[in-house]
Length: 400
Ligand SMILES: Cc1ncc(COP(=O)(O)O)c(C=O)c1O
Image 1 (tube, rainbow, N blue to C red):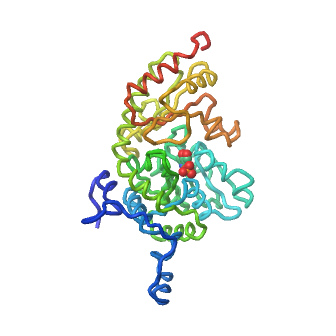
Image 2: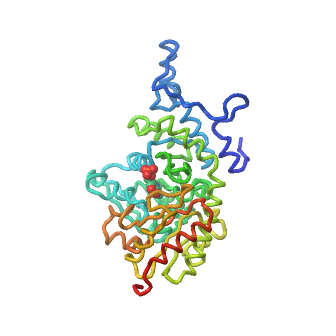
Image 3: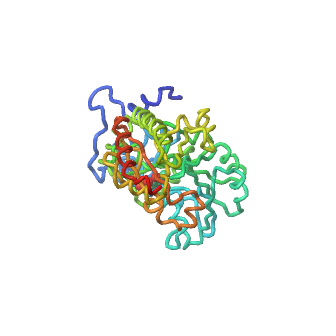
């Protein structure tokens, strides 16, 4: 039966809802489960879900979070992983074999791209990768080869915030029978549900807005259909990058407030964009909520994204040297990688998250040296503004 409850109600109650007793699932601290007799053990091993056998296959703490996340992304089922990168790697491992070809968003999270292109990783097995601007549907179409086994996109992309039309790309993928995976970390299920637009798999780094408190690392793979769900589940539970029960309970609690956190972060981000746009020392600002964003329509008409989110980029007049002055002088906005949490974070992708990509490829992907990425948190906007104002005032106006 279709669950008609709103997002916040599902975020709070899905996965575990007590009518009496504790309102949160237990932290099940047991690596293994007793069988009542041999037939019982054999029966559990023969079952598809492999419940109550051994913690690598899952336990009640991870089951509750998987159910909640599958509901929020409107998928058939979810598989928790030890990190976002473990989820990325699991989909590569599942869909790619030697000499297969993959199409990926050029501006994707640095390590997700490095894993495909670096000769120590998938490349050594003969996997060929085409990293392109997936917001350009014609380039995607032209890049498909008979050996293409996977299309993986990030939208909005990390860090450029370029937006790919999921529905259009999924049509192309379906025409060629190629699975489409969407990394939905930047939006979270509150702002975007890629499975509704034709994606086969959604992945997240839970470390970001779903957890929301910078206290745990985790990932998830959510499948639209049963077959892919059991295939990927078997891969993850066999290879072992599964999530510990303590970690699952941190995410279970964090995700309950995702909706209200995202609203506040987005509101702050909109205000910070307005402030930066009007600042004489700022060269440019990129944000999905600005009419100047190339795919603004997909956001403004709430076609694909229900809102522009909490991530923004800017460039400072005078380039990287002046940008560094700002980054080094912020006191409240923290100089750190990661994103989507309650605390505002700022970083320099070219020398940090995307340093593993060659300078030429970075420039081709739009990750310029002066680009500064901000993840806006839930602090009071006036404090964020003052912090930015103070840091920008440290730039000697003669320099720019
Ligand atoms: C879009 C995106 N996908 C995946 C990851 C990897 O996640 P994790 O750090 O949890 O392994 C990140 C991390 O920053 C990310 O930004």
